Image (cartoon, rainbow, N blue to C red; front, side, top):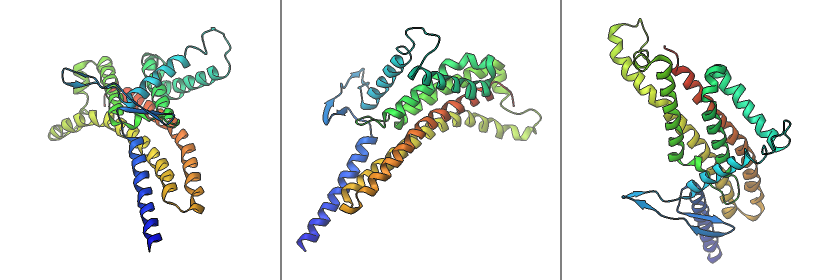
Length: 272
């Protein structure tokens, strides 16, 4: 009886530990862990507004620094023929340019929004991959981060639509011409809601996919604490397999966010 109670207690402790590890990895915090050490991040408040540096903000800064270094150091010699990592970056840039931007917007309009779309693609990709690094965190698993990215895309979509059609015509053209008059009062609120559902979909799609992937990985690793000795390799192998899949998903989610933004920009430039 004593052994059974001890085993049950250990089982419960393992479940509690695994749940704590999962939530700690997914949630934002004012501490950052590295090499089994925990560092407190600065907590700043200005005029009653909390602008403290959090774990996810730190990861976004790291992503920005890595992108600056990654796009300057390999090309600093100005060589006509690059090699190694520079070729890999060039391949990704050409993929975004040819398969996403030019296919959606054409060359003329695509070149105008290319800097933004490339920035979004590589920023999301880097943030996604940093979440798979030991002691890292996924900034794109924070809905505030994905919402900020979606708002930036929303502003670009509306601005390009107004520039292409004119501010007044952009909103009047949202209602298709030739529809019955009695349908117009229904179409106007539907179209206005549609303007906001696009960035909402961008925000939630990226956030949900990144959180779900990490939750599965951490849940499988959490099974190590509650599984019997001979079953421990199974969750570990499952976590490794899901981690490999998460690398693929990191690229896919950056691709989808960029592609949808380009498509929404293209749609905004033409009347119904």
